Image (cartoon, one colour):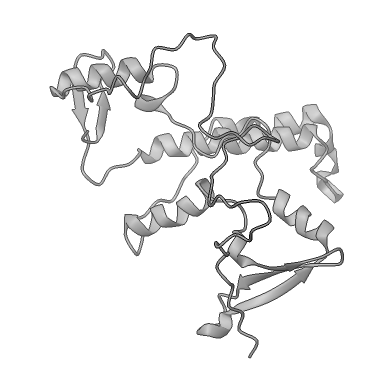
Length: 236
């Protein structure tokens, strides 16, 4: 489906330029609201400290009067085309939306005293940029949890045409205006199941109940043929 959106009356499709993503003014207002809301939340939680001439901002009413003018002024959000193209931007963002803070292949060793993992030093060029760091398990977990989103936040949130509240209706209207046929549905992929029936996974884990990916089946007393990919460590 080409880029664009529905008109305000929902009667026509407004096409966007091929290189358009989001209007900078909308982005500025969104960033302003998110930033000020986070500041108020941090102030209510006692995470902001004020000193010297700003000590009075520790009071909640004083702080609200201080940031109130910021809600009425226009914020400037600087946007420019990426140097390496949109593919590089998508590759960069995908590391944060579809991956955890650290992949298993970077873990080198773990015991009760420390956890060793590989990290990349961007100040160094060549193969020596990959180095090994050892952290106490408590410090490793603390750094790992810094990448966990707070309650109520989502990694990917859809707005406008793909907002969850009216996504089905908006997409159906857009397809009708663009004369695009709806995707064919396979009746075998959507069986007639009662809404209150429990969900059955194809291969649930016997312990946690989540989906389990079977790598290999082997008889009792036998050793599996599958082995994890060894990690090469440069000790030079």
